[in-house]
Amino acid sequence: MQQFIKWLRENLFATRMNTFLSLICFWLVYVTIDGVVSWAFINASFFGADKASCMSNPHGACWPFITAKFNQFIYGNYPQAEQWRVNIVFALGALGIGFLMVDGVGFKKQLAIVMLTVYPVLTFILLSGGILGLGYVETNQWGGLLVTLVIAVTGIVVSLPLGILLALGRRSELPIIRIMSIAFIEFWRGVPLITVLFMASVMLPLFLPEGMNFDALLRCLIGVSLFASAYMAEVIRGGLQAIPKGQYEAAKSIGLSYWKSMRLIILPQALVISIPGIVNTFIGLFKDTTLVMIVGIFDLLGIISFHFTDPNWTSPQVPITGFVFAGLVFWVFCFAMSHYSKSVERRFSVKGEDK
Image (cartoon, rainbow, N blue to C red):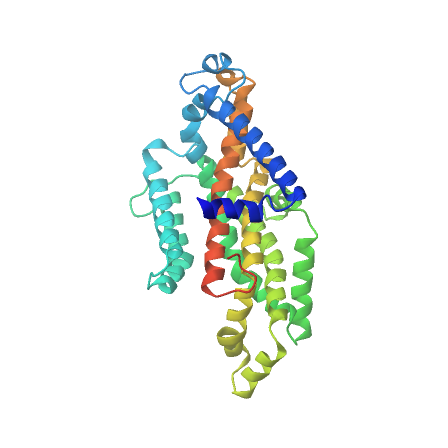
């Protein structure tokens, strides 16, 4: 107890200014927590089948709306009899990421390769079906959190290796490779993601031969992946530029080829340096998935917003509750990515890490 009081005096109440700022912060925290607890719990509605259950508590959350629509928020219009396939995909993904986040697991490298190669293929087979006795499910029936994760994971898996190649291409000594890489990066960085999605979903079919068409979700996946890879390339390039010139010269002095020096010496160091920027790009990409709602694909936020128009749930509390629920889901995933990046930084002893 005495040590705690000593810590308070030294860190929060050492001077008059520290004391004043600490009291202001305590007051803001109290007001925030009091308001959140009152809205989310004390004045909230927890049971009911329609808006009538929420109208009795106009100053609280309408949790029955989340309960009633929860299945669609997660699966969209995916056939209920086939939702076990989505559950398997979620479970395998959570299990694999969980093992990657736990220290002391001896097969992390092999598991990472499986998660980047085998898992996406298995996910596509399970979700789409049409083979191995699985019924075919069209992508226009996908929705909710399922679509959000499909777009985010695809963008992450594709953008990182493509971004590495673009970063290397931008620093290449071959003029044609360098010019093409720069043109690709600057084009995709200079175009808003909304425009990319609109072009991929609306304009692209107009330029295809008659009778040829791409799946709408696939077009969005390609657009998001290419868009994210341009930003990823600049993050990786920053890491490459941070490597001392002596590292490149040392690799040449021992007779390593360009690709061997990159694979064994340069890229491992550059990627470690780039971890904060890489994860920041991943988090931004995850949140940008909400923009697909503009082209008629109902991700988590899109399908929540769609159900605001349900006449059985038209009440002032429903939109606020829905957006809070969506915000919490996005926060959980973004916080998990941020926490994992910090553990990776500590593992590689990155300078400037939080202790």
